[in-house]
Length: 289
Image 1 (cartoon, one colour):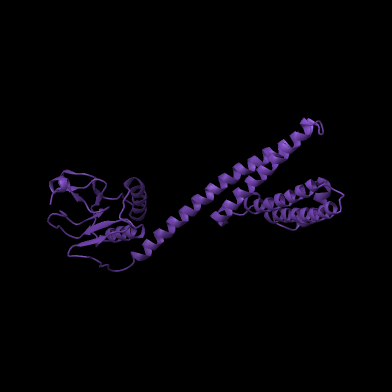
Image 2: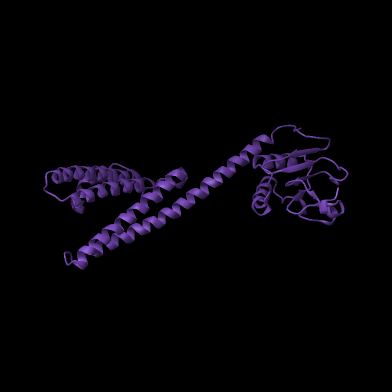
């Protein structure tokens, strides 16, 4: 469907003057959908009456789909809607709409090239379509960039929410949930991936307490070997599980389903002092008892 730019602007100008830039862009996109649907109905009647070939109906249907995708972009990409107000689902729809508009334009060029090769259309007629394709590809690139930003913001929001849950939990005056004298065990999902989990934990701890996480043992140490324990892939943190930092750390680990052992005192064969052991229990070296 083709509209004279001058006529199109004259129709929409009064509407745009009374609206914000974002509302004006959306209104123009909605008007394009309305006009495309009207054109589709008109062409459908002509095709059914034998006045136009069926391929014109297919083109009109593509114009409607193109206008509908343009309306999605008007709301999510072209307008001034703050990024933080967009959801990840809206971002996915934005990228998908931009991708479909690129693919439709590529198809138009392919179809026109066949006419050019057949001597039915002039080669110069391809240039406007190629310029439009460049613009759509640019919009697709921008959509991917904005979608990534939205995803990053959503991840940050989820992180902040988890931190707030920890903040709320640590307002409790006391916490007692030990499975045995001097020790609490939380199984979690049974897995602890240090390369993945520790970076986030250390950043969260430092943000909360303004100092680094007091790690007393990272992996295998001479003390653990002397105790006959395989401490590889485990981390010990020198905090009292009943203190403010210890309570926060235990809630964090539970919230993220990370296994741990919390020792409030020395336990022969298990712990030399109060600390929190992050990860599954240490196994015996060489299957020693």
